[in-house]
Image 1 (tube, rainbow over the protein chains, first blue to last red):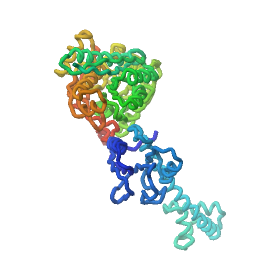
Image 2: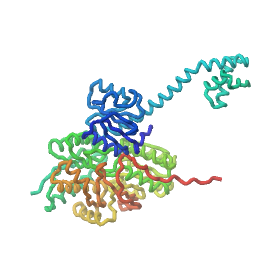
Image 3: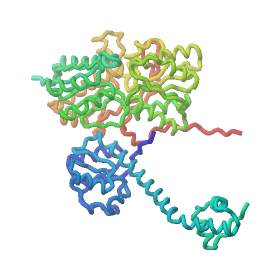
Length: 194
Length: 380
């Protein structure tokens, strides 16, 4: 079973015109152990550092966040009363991963925070993984070239040459791509056979 | 002229947890009689009773009748979290106040609910802090097959993992399922240090009886070697279980045997209405305290308007049979003392450990207990 995060010590910024609903929200956030700051102006992370953002998706505008749409460094929860597709799309574009319907019910806050944090963490880890895989795909031609060089120099077939390259990478605790690049650059010796 | 307030009293005196419902209702009735007999009080209470007989759907119907038809703005009631969560949306809609007096699994803090029962940082965490260091950390977890059992055992698992303990098994039973033989056989095979019993009603009684039979066959499963510990077993159910439960443990913020002047006075009143042999449970005392506190707060506010009652409540302290009651304005939860009781042969509990009132932390934002990890031994 996945374990919901403990929010104690997290800093939340609520981007919403202060009203009864944001009072209730701030009270509930403090019960969950977060400190909450309510403001209705563009976010400046240097002035108000945040681990989590709750934003009024009914009134929010582009430019509210100091980053490109969807590139949010922290989880975002949309506070939404409207059912207008455009407002829901705006929330999605900002990178919101959970919604709390307005008027805010205290019982809706904790589940939304858990969901937003979990989906945000998953997105980040997926993005990092995709980045690594893209890098490897980009460097695949280097690996092929290094394998061919080892085949020619050592008189091995392709499978044997690939194994030799892999062994070297493992022994030196480098990626296949790094060793391949070093071999092609003549910086590292060709793997010994046997 | 005394102001009369209508208060809904919503408890099931039939169905699988009737014993708890009966105690809550009796406690509420005692408080109502006392208030109405006391001419010096500026308020009186007209109770509107609802008895859903343990059926979730009927809680909704009864609560609707109280709030919409009878004009109640306050309800004292519900025992299971299932029933409470059923009723809350309706209480919110009518902007009423629900008084919930039972121990529960936490992770809730509704503005329209006053919680006078304990949440896990007031029951399970101090229980483990008290018992694990001396009793061992290899636990077997039992639970009623709904949110109480699931959440209590999820937290128990977390606490055990963090304190170097181990979960040897985890089983769930519906309230009325009394087929406990396979569970007892599994416990016999796995030989835990203790059993955490979050079963409710008949399944719990059947388990305690079958486990006592196992203890009679094999001393390793007697209470002194492998105790069964609960966070909600009270005096009102010990009659159902009989002598099988003697020696096992439960936690509560109130036991009949509490040696406090407030409790002695209270028990005289109970004896006056229900006879001297009546054992008072935390359910009885909880509902009694809720009705009394509600009446005192409404008297001070001059109205039963929930907003006014709540703010009076947050500002004051209230005398109760278990000591002074305070309601935290942040959480709407009571600060409560912790008592660990061992079931004795007289149908009551011997209090073996106590802590003064602990503030409620329903979302467990604080440290999750300080159950010391076992000291490492040097193995040569």
